Image 1 (cartoon, one colour):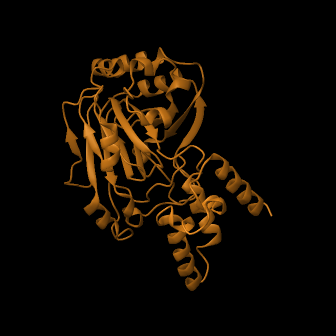
Image 2 (cartoon, helix red, strand yellow; image 1 turned 180 degrees about the vertical axis):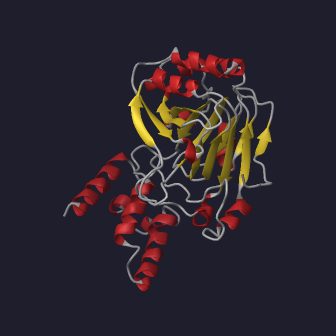
Image 3 (tube, one colour; image 1 turned 60 degrees about the vertical axis):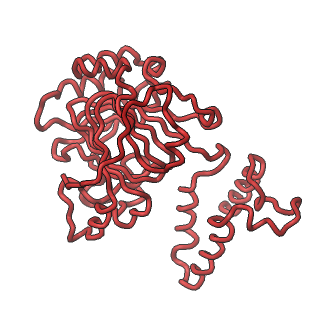
Length: 343
């Protein structure tokens, strides 16, 4: 693995009912809170061994098939694109949670085991009751208006290649050790994102293999390393990192489990910016440079500048979408877009 000297800030001694969620969000920097979940039953079972942890998880099986990913030993646990970049280097299937856990258990201790991974599995839907015994105390008022999506991640020694998420993340390391390699959003060009389709898990991932970087092919990756930091997590540790931070996740033991909380402070009626990006590729990227320069100024005025500026000189009744956005205005904008896209 590459050597990164910078380590993520670590804070010890935070009580489970005193997590400073608002301060974490305001700081907009990754931070580890050690031992916050050390007394959760799943963490305790993991300390007994992987079989005990898997048996505990199987007791919450809701009976719905999960999505499992399997890769051959040759990928070394790194899920991503194939050599051509036009496909993926693993297969996916729907299977029972117990069958997935049995598959992992069957290869415990093997040096060249098949890579088994189940990511972003809705905790309450697929393992009902688990969160009641293993869950963060979400006692900040912001979570009432912005409830998190809570998921579980299971597998053996696997690597989720560096990618970004559109929400803030609270990642609870439950069983096995995990390593997060983190990059701020402005490093996107230095991380050489892969194709938009297909993607390993819904988001583009880096083309750079961190285990053995090809600096001739990806020379700007050296600059990304200068901005990188590493978060080493033990079972019971909690990692916070903000939305849009790139992160590679290495699960380091024969069986690993993580529970994470994604949340975003934007109202639910707002559309995802990812759709804007795709539409911009369709409508802006290949226009002449003078036009693109003009559109950059328009976006700075209407989108990236102060929200009130574009409508401040208009009578309030005439501001429409230039005023503060609400659910009704969002519906009208969505209808206008659909009409234009379907013309």
